[in-house]
Length: 351
Image 1 (cartoon, rainbow, N blue to C red):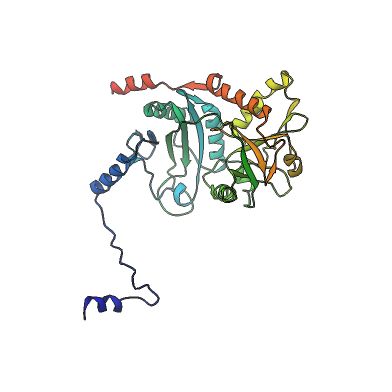
Image 2: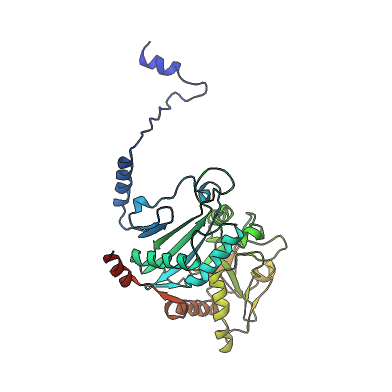
């Protein structure tokens, strides 16, 4: 029997005749590392200048080695929490505020930390210094850890962190949003910053498919909730800053900072007041101005919702004024922590 007949005889019913057999190589450790390093050498800029892994117990500068175990429960069960602090001009913004929320999320998720809070904080600062990144984001995770593929944790919690080199800037251009049809998370999961972001991803994709930037969740009682990974705020027609209650959504660190800074505009007479309360969909859509609130924005003006303009349909003056307050706080405010780049490098040279 010729080779063609042999191939045909071994074919399974319903299998395409032109389906080629895939031959999967088996690589040695050195071969695999060589391929990983080749991949990263093709990158024009290293987007991840540093990582920390408690699995290795060290800071990692080679992106080819920035990996986590496949049997980590954060990977195959989603049992993990995370948070992000921004890096701006060589300073970490609101690191302690984000770290406190991070540990609250871990407690709700029943994940213990392999280190006390101050050790986590020290690792994050040292890793940022090692990255030499002056502008970007510091993201970090607590996982129930590697060990097996069961549901319950294997008892080896893990801490990971990475620096994202990102030249972000203050957002001043308005965007469009839609009301999400993707069910929002129940309060237990929405109020902790966990890695289960599938509803968030689907809500974002839904908005993009409709030609919008992102979506807005409305709860089952008809009250405004949040965006897919940001809080939302409004300026009422009587010039009151309104934010939805945090009872069933994530308490945003930037949103809380906005609430602390906004009274400055009240003192100047630009705002009439600052309130956190339940906001109906009708009231929200009839607001004078609208904005997303999040760490990397810090405010993003919203000018259209479900095809209808918000207020005048243009970026509002109070939105920009609030954005300027937050941006100023990020650049020269008291919530900044200087990253000790030079001191860290000097210490490393002595090791």
